[in-house]
Length: 141
Image 1 (spheres, rainbow, N blue to C red):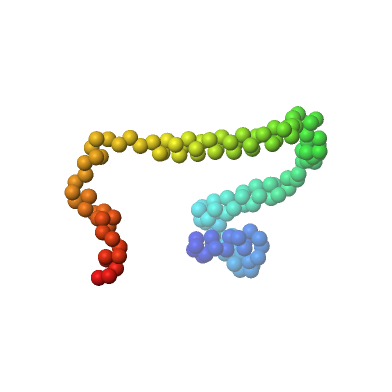
Image 2 (cartoon, rainbow, N blue to C red; image 1 turned 90 degrees about the vertical axis):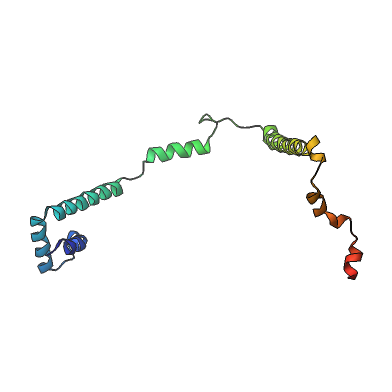
């Protein structure tokens, strides 16, 4: 038996689903091949860790503590928020957002023309010649 076939059959061997002939071949290969034996050992170790994790159950004390805090938040140390603050908090947030947008628009509209912007090259001035000509003249041709 080669290592590839042994690796393929290790799961079935571990679960006991192999025929007697194949089982003896896998056992013989595991005795001879150190790499396959190590791989099989790691698989057994992983199975034992998984089975131990499955065996751990929920902690009933933790569940009762959490449920008590849900039912009585004042006793758990949580403070309640007054209804006025519940209303004012979103209103304050919306007002500050509106003010920020307003200030942003004001800052964006500030324009300081410089002396260099007054003089444009002739080529750029002629690009916008559609404002000079009438649309009616162009539509008749």
